[in-house]
Amino acid sequence: MLTSSIEFSKLESELSSWLDKISEAPSFAELDKIKTSLVGKSGAVTAAFKTLKDLPTEEKKNQGEKLNKIKDRIENAISSQTKKLEKHLISEKLKNETVDITLPVENERFGGLHLITQAVRTIRDYYLSRGFRVLDGPEIETDFFNFTALNTPEHHPARQSSDTFYIDGLNETLLRTQTSCVQIRAMINEGIPIRMVSIGKTYRNDKLDATHSPMFHQIEGLVVDKKPISIGHLKSELMKFISFFFEIKDVAIRFRPSFFPFTEPGMEFDCRYTKKDGKIIVTPNGDKWLEMGGAGMVHPNVFRNCGITEQAYGFAYGIGVDRLIMIKHGIQDIRNLFDTDSRWLRYYGL
Image 1 (spheres, rainbow, N blue to C red):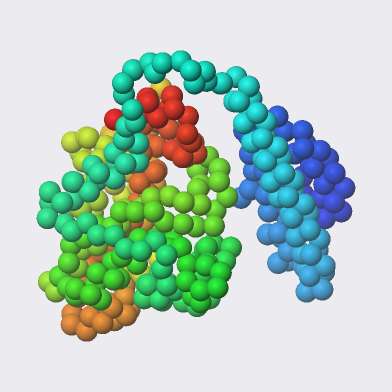
Image 2: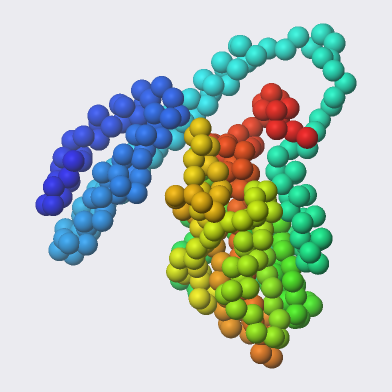
């Protein structure tokens, strides 16, 4: 759609057509498709932003302002259509799923354990059985525990309100973006050595879609000792947990270099998998690699920020519990985990 010379005028001329397509999108799937084609990682508008760097300063400023206006109109239109589709969906449900409250109950079963509750309890019991401590902390945190102590610089994007929910009227107070702050509190209050995991809710300023949620669950592990600990120990720990959770004898994992302020070196880890009937199957013989989470050796600055002055070695890792559940049960949309459809809850409930 764009040439190397950046046809900004073409973008402006096509905006009206795009807005019409958005307003006429008949489903969430179609709306997501349009969104991806426009403002996704490889979308037309995103591509235009990437080419701004090649323009002279003044033209870059002018065209940048135009692109931001185009992007804002597209995102506002998508938001409006999303609300319209949600309203229509609720209306259809009310129309087609009415319940006669005068009828007797079908059976005597009332309630059950949600998939997330099942997973959290299973993971907790697993680590407790291996001698780990399972700790939690406040979901409303301070900037120090959530960012500063974790070696996150002042200019880091994660500190921006576009990524983090800050509490109005409370200085430097926010909804925790990770459960790593529980690890910080544990090291400050109890020192080392320590073997622990934290499992709980975390919050980030993400738009709700099939793979993102502004509230999700995390498990983070931390092992620190005065004796040497290596990446080999980290890999072994991850293999044990993945093997346990997916109920398989062996797993194959690999590390990819990545950057996290609180680890050095930092890495992301993947598992081998294959697909069967459209479902992901974690297996050591798989022909593909699946991203599972982030990990690394604890950065020396984190130890210093926690008041640990003696020689210390340790590793940490974090995995999304909701993602683990989706992979294990073949769930394609994270929104299903937070829906209130009683049929879905009965199917997966325990």
